[in-house]
Picture 1: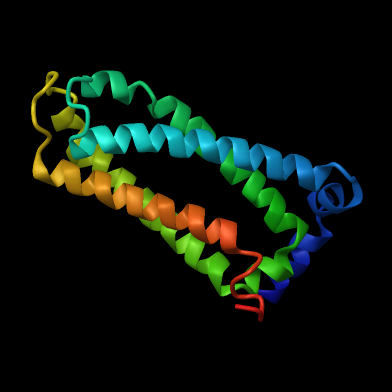
Picture 2 (picture 1 turned 180 degrees about the vertical axis):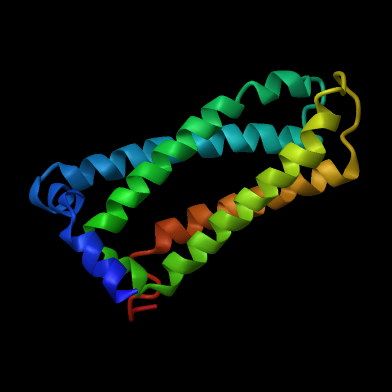
Length: 163
């Protein structure tokens, strides 16, 4: 792990992030805006999947998927920027690793959605009830993503010796 951290610090990305006054604030702003967009999209999609506002067809809600995926990609890119900028701090923080585990869990849940839920729910019409397993996948998604959001926000305060 030390070799990886040393390599991250030696890259031009580390220099870019640390040597330009606006790099870190720009990463923070993009990360926050993309996270808001991602969470908004997921909240709408998952709440509809759970059964709220059934008058809206799942196909219409599903049209937010590209927005969520692009937002996630922006978060990944900016998150890697943070990691390249300060790998020693992040790698030493247990809350960072817990957040990463939650992201992996959310990704696995998304694969379950794609494989087992999406083919079924996209055939449903307005006001048709969502199958129980689809509701569970939606609830699990929200739990994972609110965990990611919470741990991401609390990273500076948890696992740094002060929490």
